[in-house]
Image (cartoon, rainbow, N blue to C red; front, side, top):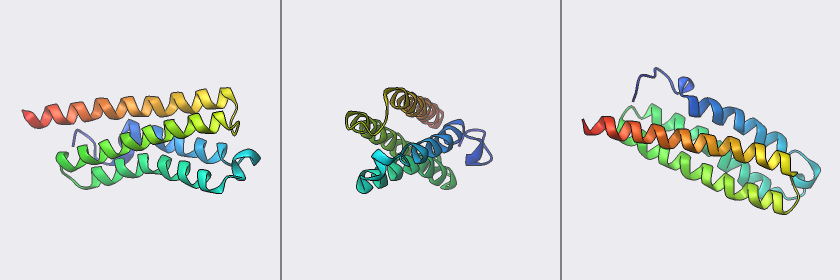
Length: 124
């Protein structure tokens, strides 16, 4: 489980918490608001990132934690895909799209690194 005492100490969880707020704020604009299903889906996918990090940590085994980190990473990919659609539909402007895309990409990279670390430490 690494050297963490709680999931709140995990950098990818901290960044995903901030990202969740950014997604909620972005989806409050009038363009997004009219597409209720899309708003709900992108928010749920975003929440899934931080929620799976937390749930995996609380399972107290590296094997289960890694599984949930993979689920969190998959949710990050889902959000990335949805951000492209939001931009294509002009729900968000280019600057907001790039900022959100960079944030979720960073989280995904952090998760990949953490997964590799946990998987290699289990093999020893």
